[in-house]
Amino acid sequence: MVRYTKEHKQQTKQRIITTAGRRLKRNGIDGSGVATLMKDAGLTNGTFYAYFASKEELVATAVADQMRAQHENIVAHAAPGRAGLEQMIRWYFSTEQRDTIEDGCPNAALLDEIARSTAPTRQAYTDGALTLIDGFAARLAPHDPPSARLKSLSLLGMMAGTLQLSRALTDRQLADELLEQGIRNALALLDAE
Image (tube, rainbow, N blue to C red; front, side):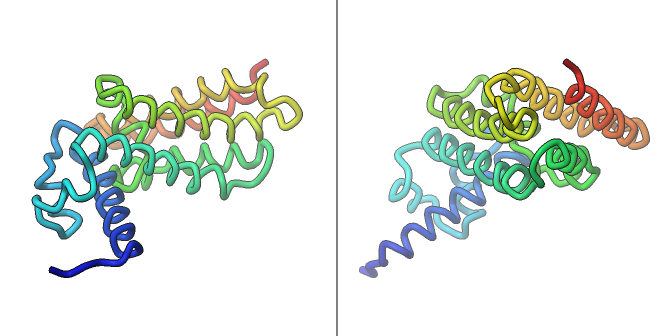
């Protein structure tokens, strides 16, 4: 029997989490079975329970990981202040973001399923969403982020909903126009009192 180091086990677990996050965004939570998730990670179905007690545990962990990654990708690397918010909005409403579901926003890909998921998955999402919202709020009102929290929550909802709708439309021109309008709407929300 081969014994693996703690580092190897942690790397393997992270590979499962990362590949599961991509698959869940592409096929949905209900459309992704354990066998498929493990195959994506290059592992056998039998090794799953060495890392997770259930699919629900993996889903909650993958959602938390996807939300953390989204924060790192769009909030942590953006410029400070309103310029940073505009940078995030323009990136979020890009056609690239829309067209690469597995690499894109977990909000737009999974919100409807997260709402019907287990409490741990919903909590993992909530924690991640609050981190994003706080990052928006700190740029929106640097001297009083709590006052900007509700506006930031509205911004996140507007962004996710607009991206979901743009992904669903078969008319590419209309979908692109919707993204452009999403930018204008989000920027208007930032300026509204």
